[in-house]
Length: 116
Image 1 (cartoon, rainbow, N blue to C red):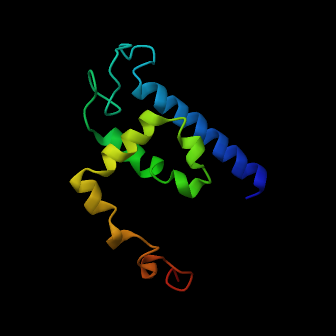
Image 2: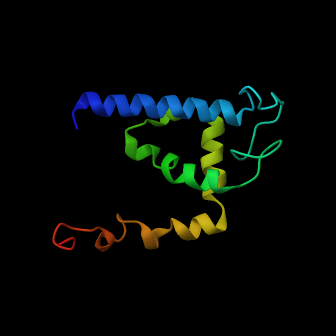
């Protein structure tokens, strides 16, 4: 993947993060435009934890691995709070803990030899 492809992916990721930030702010059309920020992606009012949060978290939590800087993420304060909120849930802590971290346990990585 060339540098242009990486930059396009990063730009698209930041665009999607902007949409999520707007949604969490309750600023999207039909979002009620309330004063309170949403806690979760779907549901009335502040939202309710759902499969939408589970699915999005798996991708959004990896922002550091996508060459997105801390300064860039500072532009998404509600998204950062959402990442933290979801990451603190007990089931999420168990599911993404060190037992499943390939940097802590490199033996979890599939190698070309294992795949054959």
